[in-house]
Length: 174
Image 1 (cartoon, helix red, strand yellow):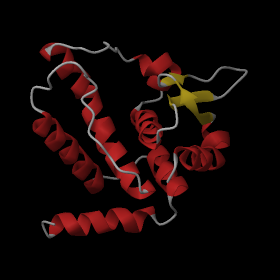
Image 2 (cartoon, rainbow, N blue to C red):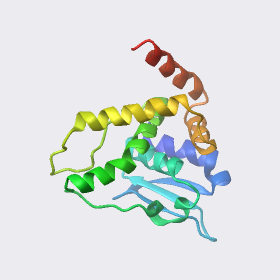
Image 3 (cartoon, rainbow, N blue to C red):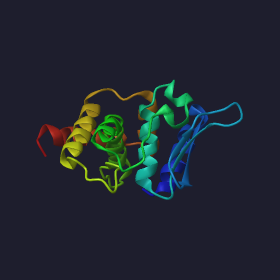
């Protein structure tokens, strides 16, 4: 699925009920909370489908108080980051990228783990990948929140079948 189709489906299904719209073309991703005059805005980078899904995953993971804050109130240290700053970054990113992985599977988009630290050696990219995969598997076992389920449904009405197929693969060690 292309980035513009992801945004179109999200906006068609969720813009009114969630007062949130997804818009591409940004130089940098950005979340702007709603005001009295406009809905919340999820801006994703340029024309990247993975960026759209990543920013939507942040929105799904953010609680109601965080959705009232610019960029959900998260700290962001631009790269390069040292080991302690990278660990702090990854603590927030692992659950987000775990959900992004599932969204990507439903949308038919290739997923790439992102340490978001170009110019610095990632201490252990395979360990980060394992934590993201474990987060995705854990999400498969638990109930999805209403916003997350609505996003899955917007991306593909057959989303439950897609994710149930993943459960079966995991059960058989595939």
